Image 1 (cartoon, rainbow, N blue to C red):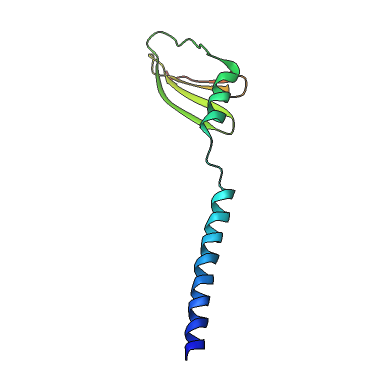
Image 2: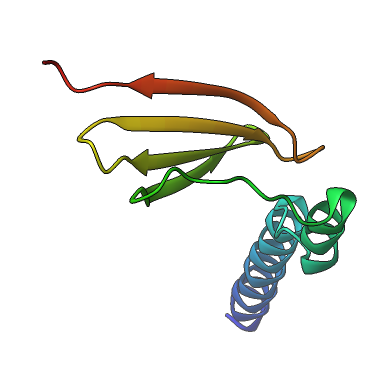
Length: 101
């Protein structure tokens, strides 16, 4: 009976240790996005200035796949979508959406 109790205790300890190693392995594989990497990207090209037309407002900004997409609502009822490269800060394109007459 004591041998069975010892085997159960040893197996319990092994299960807990195995789960701990599994969690540790998963945590080391996750990229948490270090703040120093993010600040290095921001400093790679410095400040970028882009002029908006009079009366225009920024409606939203989204970042994906190395690009920043800025949605601009124009005063005349139209809209623009401006695309910037996050590596260089350069404007890579503009899509102008005009209101129908």
